Image (cartoon, rainbow, N blue to C red; front, side):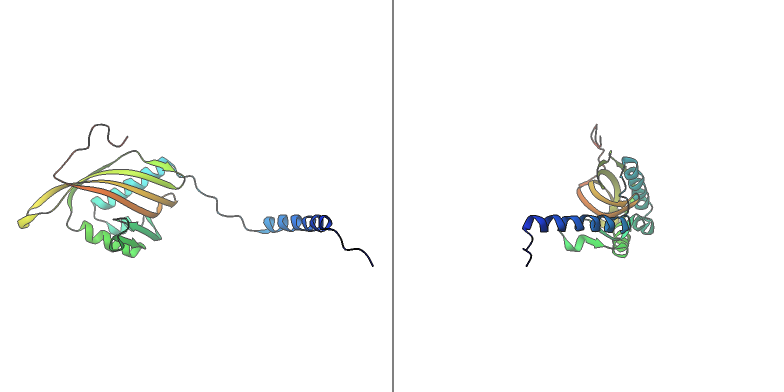
Length: 175
């Protein structure tokens, strides 16, 4: 009767067969998609297109900037202000931009880390006021964006402050 192999022998045998199998499996596996490297100019192109869509009230152009299953949080943590998918984002955009006019907007220098970016916006526009009048408002906004690819955002979270009147940004804003 042969003695049972000791633990050390079993471990060596297991490792000796496991390593070639793992290497072969890795070599046979399809290559994963290369992650893209988000750059500041990618974010600038995106935010420029986003603001153009807003200025033109073009919901189709706006939703084309998002992945099909994107999440858009107009007010973080509020379910009624969270929109998922291009259809929901487009419906939100049509509703929110319809009464707006005379929009002017600028953006600050984006901050980029990995596939995320943060961009400040300073937006002045007119909205319906009391008695059929129009009134100026200033929207000071920060968008936290997660990109899936250059030009496509999978998540936009907005943090904003709404002020009455047409207010210019302070010196040095956005840098």
